[in-house]
Each structure stands twice: as C-alpha cells, then as structure tokens.
Length: 385
Image 1 (tube, rainbow, N blue to C red):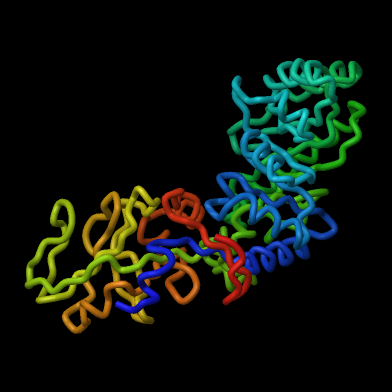
Image 2: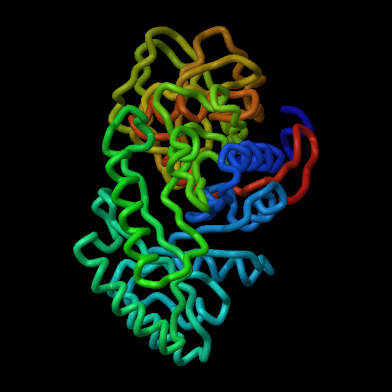
C-alpha cells in the first residue's frame, strides 16, 4: 500500500466543473436564441446544486430550475440571485418564503389561491408560470381546466397578488425522437399559449423542452429550454452516447479497495451465495454499497482498477460489493488502489445503468450523501472538497 493510498478519500464522487461548463455552453448554443434553464433539482442530479449552479451560470445559463421550493431557497441562501423557478408543490410548501425570495412558482391549478394568500401576507406580487398538462399525465392543468384557471388568474392579477409571467409543460417521449406524441404535445402547448395570450397575459417565458427536446426538437425551444441530464454530460437517448452529442460526463465515482484475498474454487460470494468462483481466484472488496446509492440490482457491473476492467460478483450489500478478479492478480498490490465505477479513466455510467436495468439519470442521482463530493476544474485542478 502506497503512502498516497493512506491519504485523501476512501470513496469519492469527483465532479469536473469544466465539463459542466462545456455542456452548458454546448446546450445554450443549440437552444439559441432561446435561453437555457439549468435544472439543478435533486442536488443537481447528485452533483451538488450550489457548485453546479454557479458553474452553469458562468457558462451561459440564464435561469435555474428546481422541483421543490426548499431546493430553491437553499440556492438563495448561498447568494445565488438569478431567475429561479420551482414547480412541484404540496400543501406544506413554504410559498410565502418563496415569494419573499423572488422565486417564480409553477402553478397547476389548486395552488393559485394559496399562493395569492401567501403573496398578500408577504406584501409582494408572486411571479407565476402556469403549467399545462399537454399529454404527460402528471401535474399541470388540463386543457379543459385551463380556461377557468385563466379567469382565476386574471382576477388575482388585477388585485396585484400574482403576475403570470410564464407558461410551461413537459415532454413525455422526447427521448424517443420518432414518437409522434411529441408533435401532439407541442401543438397542444401552442394552443395553450394562444389561450393565455388571448386572455391578456404578457408572457416572458414559454417553455416545454427538456434535454432531449433541446437536442432533437428545435420547434420546441420557444423562449426557454430546461436542461437537466444534458448539463451533467449524459445522453437521454438509447442510441446516442454522450460523445455522439458532444457532451462530457461530469461525475467520476471511485473508492479505495478495502480488501483483496485469495479464495478456493467454488467459493460463494456475498448474500445468498448466488455467485461462486470457477477456480482459485482473488476476491476484491469495494467499500460502496446500496447505502451509498449503488443499486442492489447491479449484476456484473464494470469496475476499472489500474486500467484493467473487472465485474462485480454477487449481490451488492449495504456498504460494499465484491469482484472476482481472477487468479493472476496480486492481492496485496490491489489493496488501497482506486476502483473506478464510472467516469474519467473508467467505465461509462451508461454501462452501470445497463447492469442495473435502469437509466443513467438514476445512477448519478442516487449517489448518497455518505459519498463525499470533490470538485475539480479540468483534469488536474482541484477547487473544493
């Protein structure tokens, strides 16, 4: 074990902010003249909301987006003072605090009178983006509900409690570009815009495009695009890689090998003993498990050690997983080496997604807070721990 292996991080998710900047610039160029909203919900898909937000704003993002108001408030607490939208609410959402912090609010319908009441308490007009369900079937007003919602909004706007500044929706199948439902959704969205403008509202932001919509549907760009997975350098398409799209993955996940030992043939490995060695072999223990966000469903997932690729063996446990690296490795030399699950000099996160029968979004987003984030800027520049 080297002196270096006794220092630093036992496990770490390294986030290359230069890659975030590259991706934002790339997407902003594709979206222009529409502006770009960097979606930093879920702690920036596991990458760290505050550092990512700052990097995105430095690189061409004009807006930030979060699902929850509390996520948006946390950005404000860190001095981030830009156009900011939060769109998923409950009866316990702190609307008054959001209005006081100049956070724009998405409205599907029921929230409107509640937000108006909060605005009255805050003695400040709430900025509203009406959300329309154009076909995804989640939140958002239906087209049948929209006319009455517009009437309610007109009254509340005339009273100075709210101001409708935007209208938005969300695409259901833009990651499958051949699906005609996207055409249908865009048409419904255009109809919703027309109704809203006919009702007398002057809109600053019309937005429906997510990352796949930004990449594949210029007709969906409108005034603003909302990019999430793309700014983290990952592809939303099954048949196109990050490289194909000119994007750079920002996260590298790795951990020091905790143990390595020689075992006989037919040695069972991990809970359930679902895996057995075929021959005398070396088992390697990687100290990352489902408590760290590694999916328990992972099967033969790829890991790189010293430029050699191996595969996970047996079930993922809470704190660790095992690899069978064959009989020819030196176990003592492996202890303390970095096992790279994905990212720079390792497998692609898409390979882990395939091994877990899921999508790349889930792999990066679920990496837990038990794994420290280390921020770098470029291949060698360390910025923050």
